[in-house]
Length: 211
Image 1 (cartoon, rainbow, N blue to C red):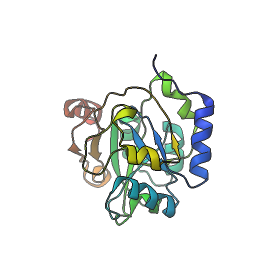
Image 2 (cartoon, one colour):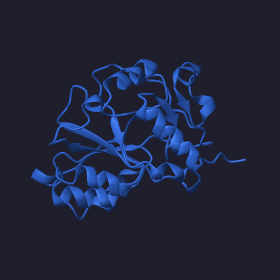
Image 3 (spheres, one colour):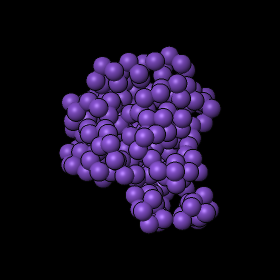
Image 4 (cartoon, rainbow, N blue to C red):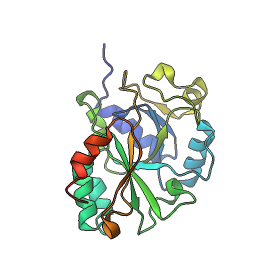
C-alpha cells in the first residue's frame, strides 16, 4: 500500500521544526532532512547527522509557491518573479540573489545567495502544503553518498538521530535540477549547474522567453 501523509503528519512536522528539531521527510524527488532555517543550533544538528561540511549552504524549501513569493516579494525583480512562476513548483533548486540576507542558518558562508525549492508534491504527500513557512532542507543521506528514494535507503544513523521521521513511500529518486538565476536580472542569463529531475531542454523551454 502506498504511504500517504495526513494533516496530523504536517502538524507533527510543524511542531518538530518549531521545537528546534530535525526531521526526515519525503519530497517530489528524494528523501530530505529539514529544520528551521532561522535556527543555527538546529542547522548544526542537521549538518552533524549528514556529516556535511559546516560552510556549505543548504536550500530553503517552501511547500507552496504563494508563501515563497510572499516571503521574498520585496527582494525579487519582475523577471525573477516570472522565472519562479515558470519553474515552480517543480523538481528544481533555484539560486537567487539574497538581497535581504535572509535565512542565515541555511546560507552559511554565502549569505548573498539563496537556494530555493518549491516541490510539486503528489496528492498523497499534499498534506505538507499546509506548512506556510520555509524549511532548511538537504538530502537525507551521508554527505557524498547516494540519495534515498525510499525510507529504507536512509542511513540508520540519520533515522535514529532525527527527531521525526515521515514515511512517504517510494519516491522518484532523481535529485533536483539546480538552476542559477543570479545573473537573470542584470544580464538576462541563467545557468543549469546540475541537470537532475528536470531536463536541460525543459528548463530552456520554460525560461527561453525570459533571456
